[in-house]
Image (cartoon, rainbow, N blue to C red; front, top):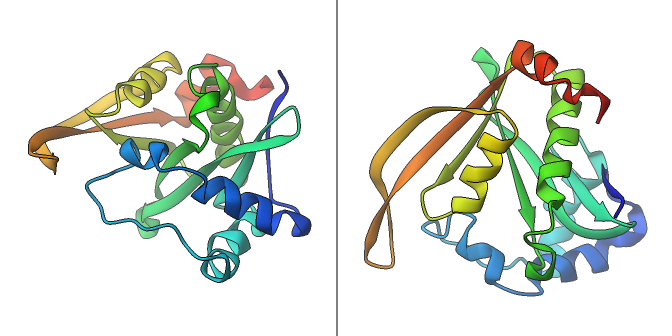
Length: 177
């Protein structure tokens, strides 16, 4: 399995939109306590697709050249260079195959190589044990646990924050990924 990340190609608008709206399974783990509805093709083209084409804060994950997900980043506070990163594998048929464990290091290396930052954060919730496990597997440190701040389907969950410093990333030797 060849796993890569890259900006989108102009001719991928419809196929990437279809990937994003193909099912709702991924939305159960990606902050389901926030309102979400699938974008129309026009909405997708004007927003996410433009970001995917640019590739600076959103890129496509491919498995053997087939798009299966995205990696992203956003500024929690750009003035202080506080950057958060994330990943979504849209098709659950690709879950549990180690794709995220290979795509996230590519993305984090890209972020450290292209942005003036000293830390990459990843925030998830206790309802997503795979993401918590991935962060630890990759060497991220759990930096915070805000207890019972996410309410979903009648139950409280924790918000869990992980971080990786540039110096720690270099020590992990992920640069050659």
